[in-house]
Image (cartoon, rainbow, N blue to C red):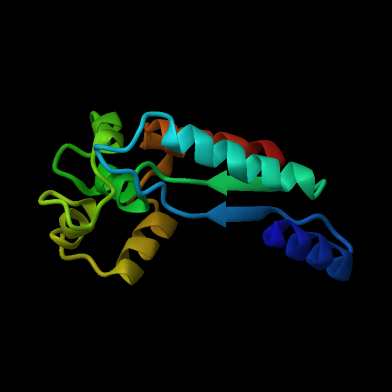
Length: 141
């Protein structure tokens, strides 16, 4: 896995440990076979293991990162967010997550500021894919 090799090289250059985060959306659709997210997680983690890099983390939103943000920005923020993970990751879907996030009218830069300022409380996001990512990351910090 190229990311693990880059991280190991950077670790040597800096003479300190680094954490590599492989981020990609799961992008499943409602017609995708069950287990797609788990298969992708396993594939990423196997790649880190093959390269003997134990400080790698899979950041794999299910179905995509917009779901994590919608959880915090919707009218009833942080409530029943697991349902978002069952939605299609297809941007051509009639109720796609990308359009829903855009409907909030918040620029991405402002969303970043909201996270940094604590307006978006990542500790309140309760979604299996987000919980998995944060648990793996916290174990390395």
